[in-house]
Length: 235
Image (cartoon, rainbow, N blue to C red; front, side):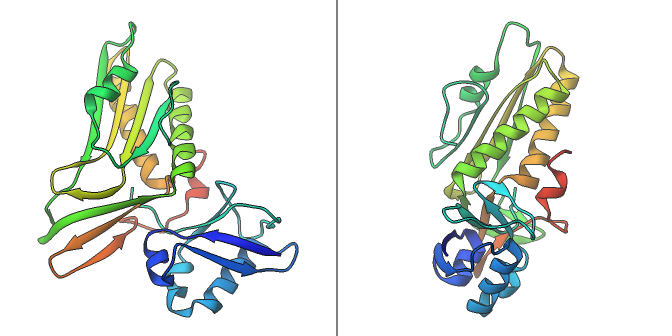
């Protein structure tokens, strides 16, 4: 069977394209798929070994079987929808993010506290000057995972309302890359839920950033490892 595989961020750069076709035997597993990819793209093999595979927008195990027609995506370590009209509001966009927009989304008559978290593009990291950042997302799956996080938050803090948004594309120094708005009856829940939301977003949402410096660039993954979003799905 022939499968169509979506590639993102650094692994797409290493392979030289954003989609590839592979011929696999019927019933092939995720592990067999990645092994074949490593053989066909040896220069990208070290990065391929760090990737997760998503089948139909869900993280898959190495032994998971691939079926004809499955949507396959190779997900490199993440650095961290289309906008919906009904809460929870989770979206990715190339447009500048507005804290006021997200605050209006979560405000309600029971909220005594509204917290916003904004991740911004900083100029210096450990003495190295960043010129700009570029963000890329596997948008349908990113939205789905952001909505999962919102549901997790609402299970833990039932009276909390949450909205999340992430930029993609080219961002200049000082621009907002990610926004989370949280409304709750009391401030403690807002602080706790907001921190939970950004940490989970960095764990499981397939969004990547490329740091562009004066003398080069690099796709960035997690700052601590190892990265395995499957192990934290029920965090």
